[in-house]
Length: 202
Ligand SMILES: [Zn+2]
Image (cartoon, rainbow, N blue to C red; front, side, top):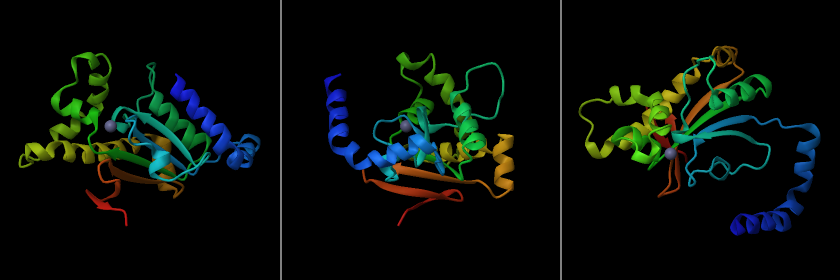
């Protein structure tokens, strides 16, 4: 706990004096983030860091592997869909970005099977991405499967966004854009999805 408290004290002494006016304005006027980012919970892939954003700029939902489930309004608990609903319908974000990454433990659990300690929730959660495994072309080398799946999981999440009727409507009306990215932890390079391929951001 001490490390967290030390971090807070650094924030309070170093960051807060510089950012105070910004926080106060956000508190008074409310948040108006332009972008919703859907990212993995992985501790190495923080959207605010990768996109160099400050407070109030990004509405973020993080879950295992950064997955978007298909639209399914029923009585179960839909944390990711709730965040989508709030960001799109209440806050009116102008873009939704799905941020995948290299060495994703969630994607690995899908491909190789979840660790035995993570079968209650991780395994069924990753079933959202099962169509990715089924659609892999046969010629993909075993070494490339994880990388390929990381990319395809981003594409699947983008496709699932389109199953939400109010997202589909907002895109058709030109009020909302979608984008996909992949972050390489080792090199720090961000690549943007262009069609079915990734292109490094210049
Ligand atoms: Zn991950």
